[in-house]
Image (cartoon, rainbow, N blue to C red; front, side, top):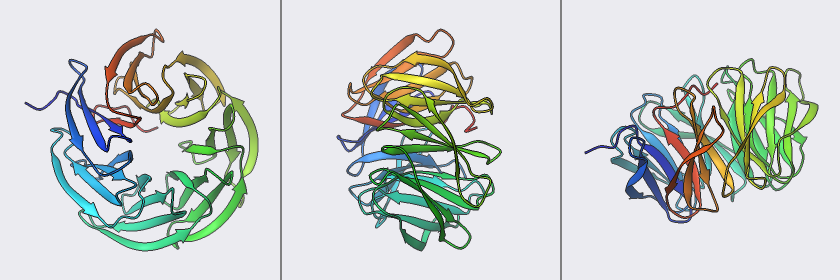
Length: 305
């Protein structure tokens, strides 16, 4: 029997994905993947969840409803982070250990490599603007971010950031970029409406600010603070922190239920999926998963903005 609203948790050190049944909140299945699965993304037709296996240079396609493996695509070099463009025409991967970004054309079934762009040291996370015109990526080990023009696949600019930039999030109006500083204690905010980014300010959230996840109301975004063991809720209209939640075990990637009531976070150092009530800020579930859980995803999720 297929799990009800399965929650997928990537176990980066176990080379597997845990499938958690959101009705019973138990791990009901563990699926082998390639080595070091870190992030995942839904295909435009919503029929496949793509798991990126960085160290195996492969992608695992899984049915997001039944948790059945569909196929494996090999020869995708070091796909640490991945993302489809909003117009669903482009598929982009960040090669964290090989220092490049790959841009693929997507025809609905196959991937065709169009351009490999050398980026600098350790490209980490990706964001693509709402017009599918610009790719933004952080450079984790050189404290930078870059912008790439997607139609021409050329580098637009390179700018300095604070220490160890990780995830990056763009507001729906394409005006601001938020950059989590894993080597710092907050989120840097940049105005990207001009030809080059303009630093606005540092928003203090907590030590090890790392991964973003939109709340689904087009006003708020969550960020995990991996060292502080907390999650901050940011109002990206006022650019302020409006709530803080305790999150155990080195919180990393976040997922939000479709009704906005539950925050699901990978507790990276505790081998657990932690579930937090967004209203009461209480930890309500703790599910055992594999080693070094990273990416979290469910089909029954809130909007990405």
